[in-house]
Every structure is written in C-alpha cells, then in structure tokens.
Length: 614
Image (spheres, rainbow, N blue to C red):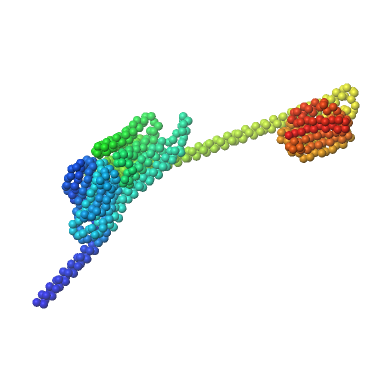
C-alpha cells in the first residue's frame, strides 16, 4: 500500500515539475508578429452593401472600378497568451481616411469618414501602438473602417500586429524611410538641382547673331524638370492637400507630365535637336503629352473612371519610348558623355514607368510603391553633372575669352603707347621747330630792326657815334633777352623782372643812370604763357630802352607789387618827360596783345609806365 502511495506522489510531483517547466518555457519564448491577411469585408458602393470573405491586399479601384464608397474589414486573430511586451500594428498602405478598432475599442482615427475627397492618408505607412490591456488570450478582433475616394489608390494592404520592438523597428521604420523620408529627400534634391539650373539660366546670357541676348535652353529645361518633379514627389508627404482633390489631382498629373516633357526637351538640347529645324516636330508630341494628361485626368476624376487615365498613361509611355529610342539611336551613332548619361537614365526610367503602370494601374496588388520616383534620382544626378559640366566649360571658355581680350587690350595699349611716344616725339620736334621760328622771328623783329636802324644811320652819315652805339647795344640786349626768354617759367613775373635787371643794369650804369630795384614778391599770373611772357619782356625792354635813348634821366626805378589779386609793374624815371596823351605805339600794341592794362603818366622830372595783370 505504501509503495503505491509513494509511487503516486512521485508521479504527481513529476507532472507538476513538467507543467512548471512548460509554463516557464512558454513564458520565456519570444513573441512573434502576426500577419493578418484573411477575414471579411463589408462594402457600400452607390448605396449597395455587400459582405464577403477577403484576402488582403485589397485594391479598391480595381475591385470597384474607381467608384467611391465605404468598407469595413474584420480581421480576427488568436493569441495563446496575453502579450508580456508592448505591441503595435503596422499597415503599409490604407486609405483614404480610416479608423482602427481592436476588440471594440477605438485605437486611432485618420481623417473624417463623413467627408469625401478631403485628406488622403494612403500616402505614408501607418504604425499604431496597442495598449496591452486590449489584447487577450484566445480570439481577438481587429476592425478597420475606411472611406475610399475615386482615383486616389484607396484600399487596404496586409496588416501586421506584434511586439512593438519588431513591428516598429523592423517593418514600419524601414517602410517610412523609403516612402516618406525618401520623398522629402527626393524633393529637396530636386529643388537644389533645379535652383542651380535656374540660376545658371538667368545668369549665363550670351549675345546671339542678331544682337539679342540669348540664354542656354538646356538650363531652363533642367530647372523646369526638377521643379515639376519636386512638387510631384512632395505630394507623397502631403496628407491634406491645399486644394480640392479634383484640382489637386489634375495639378499633380500635369507636374508628372511636365517632368517627362522637360526631361525629353533637355535630351533634345543635349542631342543638338533644339536648334535644328528638322526636329521642330518634336514639340508637338511634347505638347500633346501635357495637354492629354490634363484632359484625361480631368475625365477620370469627373467620371470616377480611373481607366481613362490608365489608358492615356499607356499612350504616353508609347510616345516616350519612341522619343527615348530615337535619342538612344542618336547616342549610339555619335556617342558622347552627356548623351550616354541621359540615355542610360531615360532607359531605366522608361522600364520603371512600364513596371509601375502594370503593377499600380493594372494589377490587383495593393501597397506597392512606384519605382519611378527613385529612378528620377538618376535623371537628377545626370542633369546636375551635365549642367555643372556645361557651366565649367562655359567658365573655361569665358576665362579664355577674358584672357584673349586682356591680351588684345594689352596689345592695343602697347600700340597706343608706341603711337603716343611717336606723337610726343613729333610734338617735341614741332615745339623745337616753333621755338626756332620764334627766336628767328624775335631776332628779325628785334635784333634785325635795330641792326637795320644802325645801317640806315651809317648810310645817312648824319648820326653820331653815340647814337649808333646805343642802337647796337639795344640790338645786343634784345638778343640776350630773347635767349633768356627760353628759360622763363610761364606766369612768373618776378623771374622776368630779375632777368631784365641782370641784363640791363650794367648798361644803365654805363649810361650814368642810377638803377633802383623795388620789386616785392608777387604771385604767378596763370594766364601768362610762354608767348605772353616774351611779349611782356619786350614791352618792358621797350619802356626801359626809351628811357635810355630819349629821357635824359639820371634815375630809373623798377617797381612790382600786389594789389589784391592784381600784379602791378611800374617803370619810373626822372627824365624830361613827354606828352602822355601820345603813348608810344609799340607799348600800346604789346600791352593789348598780352591783355594788360597800360597806364602812362609823364611830366618833367617824373614819367611812369604802369602795367596791371589780373
């Protein structure tokens, strides 16, 4: 009896131990995410409700040909035990507006289910944290109610629920980085490239053959392409558009078409077709792409029939393939770096666009992301490299032009310097010639006239030796003064009077005439140039010579002073005087020639000849 009791007790303890081990093992086993793909759906389209099983993903536009409506997805799942860690829900794509409930508790609301064509939350992946108290062992029920707008890619992808650390980190953050953060970076990159291209288009201006300013078209189309694509990609992060859905949808489609056309026009300029009249026909299919996109997008949205836009996109892809093929053939025939870059980017983009058209527009798959948005990076890099390469070449050419122009200017400066040197030498020669002519003229008018007078005196036989000697001395003095005048500074009256004193004082002393010097310091007279200084010299010499020959004076006084800004020069003697009303003709003519005011005062014992200069 006892052995049997002991055996039973041991069996009980062993079972209890094994149960505890199993419980601990179950508690320590890592929790795994659950992917919810099956359930039921209740739809309401045009007032008609239908309920049936569903297997996610669910593409609304494909299931209901683009008609708007409502859907309620019921997704049951089973848990063996209550979660020990925080959980979360990851939905790659859902929209357009929706709410999420778990076990009849509202978790999150995105947008207003009562307002159509408003916000659109299908553009970014969704993560919803789950409070631990809502999950329970056994059956659980996840419900997602949504409102679908026509043509906005509404629906529901597969849903994953599980530990937050795995669902958020491994699934949501990666998808968010590709779709949301990637869109932001792509838009920023396009804006930077577009800004650079636009700045180059505005600043790089050349003068055409017709004399009009001309800008490089390649920069314009590069800028337009990048700006269109920046707006189009930015739509991926705008859940609440600033315009109504119809206008906003058409605008986004036009931006896409504008990017396509601008890239094609950029390629045409790279291939040299932009200025070739033979390829002007290319503009018409480009314009048709933009116009057709606007028209068929409007039709698709107004009629709530996405196939209008799907059909047009097929036509657009055919047109683009034709243009890209022509460009690729031209590149193969005459390859260069720029065309190879554009051709490679174009071929990749066309392939991605065809894939997107098949997967996004035709297949029932939901949750897929377009690939074209990422292939645009190839175009952006190609555009940037080509624009910078063109700018570098233009800058190098400009530097070469500036260097050539600088060399031409330097050559012209050397030629001008040589010409100026020749002119200066000719001017010096001409000045010397004029100076010789002036000296000869002065000698002829002064010295020559005195020698002629001496000859006439000798021929008459009636002159005395003293008169003849005075005439010859006048001739010699005038010759010396003519030579002195060569070195007289223009306007320096004081220097001129000093030269007269130096030449004539010995002769005055020999004639028994006492010389008095009363010359103050006087300012230069600006208007007395070299020629005028010589006239002034001869005028004063004439006045002093008259004293020597006719005045019978014993004293001659030379004065000069300033009266305000006026320079006054006076020749005063104590001779017998003469009729002051009969001013010697030579004095009057020379004073008028130099613009001096002449005043003569004469009586026995005092004669004054005064000159004034302003």
